[in-house]
Structure formats: C-alpha cells, structure tokens
Length: 513
View 1 (tube, rainbow, N blue to C red):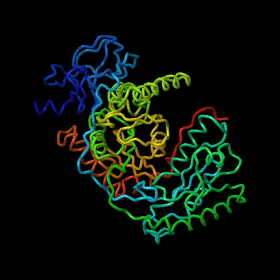
View 2 (view 1 turned 90 degrees about the horizontal axis):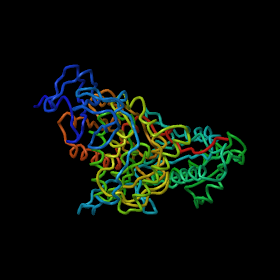
View 3 (view 1 turned 180 degrees about the vertical axis):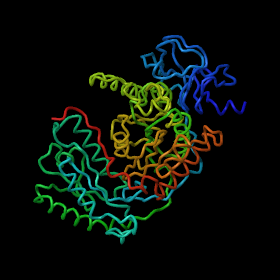
View 4 (view 1 turned 90 degrees about the vertical axis):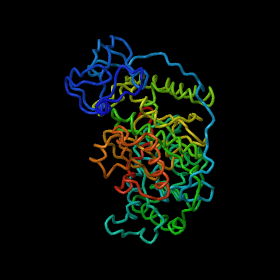
C-alpha cells in the first residue's frame, strides 16, 4: 500500500485518470487501481485507470479537462495525442457556496511602512516611470546614477539606508496608437497605479514631449497633480538627453532625504495585498504549490487582507467553480462576461483559448487549458469572490478579488501591482524566474527536484506535499509566515538577484500604427 502512494496520485474518486508521481515504466502495476502502465508515463503526467471511450470526458479534480479523441485503454498515457479541449455547458450556480468569512479574533501583524495617507508599503523605492518608449533610455540613465555596488554596498544610496533603490520602469508603447480610447485608458491606468503605489515613496514621470501618451493627458485622466514627491518632465522641454538626465538626478537627490525618513512600524496583515501568479506550470502545480498558496490566501483573507487572482485565459474552464463563491450574482456574471470576451478576443485574432498551455506546460504533464485552469484557480483558496475588476483598476475590496488580465505573467503581474498589490506570490513547476519592483515576489516550487536545481531562485519548496512529508495546510502556513516576513523587509530570492526592473509590461491592446 505504501508503494502505491509513491507511484501515483488520485485527486478525486470520479477521476478516470490519475497522476504519475514518478516515471512509470511499461508493465508497472498501480495497486488499488487494477491497471498496469501500457507504456512509459512520465512523472506528472496522467494514466487512464479505466477504459475511456472516444468523445468521452476525461476527468481530473472531478472536473472535465478534455475529451478523448480516440478510445483510451486502461493503463494508457493520457495527453495531447488522445485528449483535446471542446466546449461544454458550465453550471455557474452563482453564489451557491458563498458563506461568511471566519475572521481571526487576533489579526496577524507585520512591520510595514505607514504612508501619510494611511496606506502601508512593504518597500520604499523611488520610481522613474516613462510615458513612452522614447524616454526609456533617459529614465535608465537617471536610475543608473544611483546604483549600489552589489559586492561592496557602496554607492550614492549608502547614506540613505531606508531607501530600497531607484528603479526605472520602462515599456515599449506610448505612441503608434490612438491618443484616446481603450488602449490609452489601460496605459494611463497602469502608469497611474504605479505612480500612486505605496511602495513608491516618490516618483518622476519622464516623457519625450510629442508622443501619443502625453503626460498632460495622463495627469488629467487620472487626477494626478505634481507635488514634492511626484514630478514630471519631458526631454524636448528640458533641451535633450543630457539635460534631462541631469534634471532627473537633481530631483531625486532632493527627494532622497525625505524618502529616507520612512520607518517600519507594526501594522495589521489587512494591509497586505497579494497578486497570485503561476508560470511554467507542470502536472504538480494543481496538487502542491497552487493549493498550498490557496491555503495561505485563505489565511490572509481571514486576517483581513486581500488576494488578487488574475490570468483570465488560465481561469477559463474553472470559472464555474469561482462563480459558486461569488458574493452576488452580479459579481459572478462579471466573471462570466470576462471569459466570453476572451473567447471573442482570441477568435478575432485567429487563435483559440487552448493556445495556452505552453510547450513547457505540456512537457510537464498539462494537456489542455481546462486542466491548467483548474489547477491555477486553486491559488485563490476557498473564500468568497467579492469583486471582479478591469486590468490595472484599483482594488478596493478586501478578500478574494479577480482582475481581468492576460495569462502572460509580466503583463498580468503588472496589472496586479498597478491595482495595489504590494507583494506577488508566484508558483512554478518548470522554473520561472521573475521579479516585480516595487513589489517583492516570492517563488514557490511545485516539486523538490526543481527547488534543488534552482534553489537560488526559489523561496519555498512545496514538493513535500506530493512526497507525503507535509500537508497542504502546513505548507500554506509556511507560505503565510514568509509573506509576513517578506512584507516586513526580508528580501526575496528575486530581490537578491536584482530582478524587477525589466519586467514592467503594460497590456497593449489594438493596432500598432
């Protein structure tokens, strides 16, 4: 019996396929399932436990992950060669499982940075934002003037120990687009979200001067006004590259003494907002790291905090499970509307929702987007869905919120941070590397082999769940504890490696003109 646990994982009694825990060679018997492997089945991949007829649904998690394209015999490898996505009717059952959140009587705390407006930061950066790609190099020159030597700790910021850094967040758009409309609204909303982010103590916005994304338009549309900690400039008005760089450096030098006054103080965990991400997923993602992060999400929500689930294409096929937890039919229908938009959007661009998963996901055992989504949605735990918001829109509700974003991690996380996430938790099975200034990013490995292979990048190993040395709840508690430590100033692995400057990626919609 002990050997059986090591060989495979059954996730639901109704499943007609189980997951191989180790590589299964031809002839390997699966005790309790009454089948033997007919061929090699890689670890993390699925093996049929009974005959599955052509066109019959393939079940994992007790849910449909695809349909058989040919008869599948017991013991046969189930994957892309014999299973595909098809449309099927979902029962949304709006609000059926919604229930009052059981809040803790004694909320957890962390050491946060209290801003003048009452918001709380987990980091203390100065940010340089760009309105257009044309000002990207100038922004980087300004930020580079304040770099610290990673080996000696020497540099212009050495005398300002409470400043985490000066970071330039550049992007590839801002022109070659309409000056008004949905695409511009998204860019402005994203830039404004970062400009207002509590982890930025001060911000400079640098533009060229003639771009479509005029700084003046940004200021008016988002009700931004200049003050000692929020400045703007354009290269053309300043008289060119060198003069703009000099002006930017001078302004940051003026800001530094005030920014360095920030101090950490004990505050409730309700001030933490986590952006939930997964990338480079594998067959273990929905078994280990994602549900463990879901357990941590439940803990944070019960302490009064907020978690943001996103990556709409990677929720497709699991949305009917989330609508059951919606606090109202209106909230649930907003999520369904998001999924319908994505169906139309991919069709208009000649694609399908099953363009995701990636080749790496498939190599790791994920067969269809339905299977990927069912595992990915576990990151959001089990509490009520309290709101559904647009990309980069401010997240104001407490609890579990869904934000409409693409599945591409940098674009998705950029939207979450713009919405107010002051930390990112990122699960990975294949080995994604990612950082997200100004919000620290924690990386959660789905399996022990990955954790050992990429230990410099991974913050937590969730592989003990599949190995039987740790429960989902125990791993979730470890994640929650590390969230509090990281929010209090402990550097994540991606911060130690210097990630986060190049991952800023606003969602670009529409034609590039």
